[in-house]
Length: 214
Image (tube, rainbow, N blue to C red):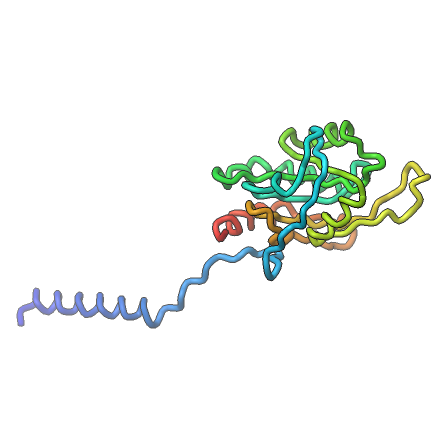
């Protein structure tokens, strides 16, 4: 056997060994998984609802179809968590929009304070943060079951006779898929001395993975 044949045989055997190693020895690749997103065990269908948008239009189940919706529950008189969360979402919105060209991503602010949050006030509020954001509200008989469907809660803990009353509410950002199903949420970070809000960078990190798996 000449030297050229020997070198060729060695190279062929090395190639075979590499293929065998790749198939049987190397560990299987692990698909990327969202790191921060809390996915519900099963997607949740949202019971029929009817609210009103900041433009005075009907907002119902059909309004959530054909898009990804990041929903946040709050109220315009909220002194801290709401404006901070809205500002954070506005900061990452250009990047979120670029993630999905087929099914757009929308941010929906759900006001649970219809007593003070008129359509005009809601329009001014969301426009301050982003002209493309949507704000919705309605009577409590429509709001409460809708918010509960999202896996969230709210409660007015004091008399509304006080013009500066506060509303307790969940601080998570809920994700609804293009089929109008609740699939999970981004829970707020809890750190001593800091506001408990959902981290916008965590949302931005996980959304491409979530969209790619849908």
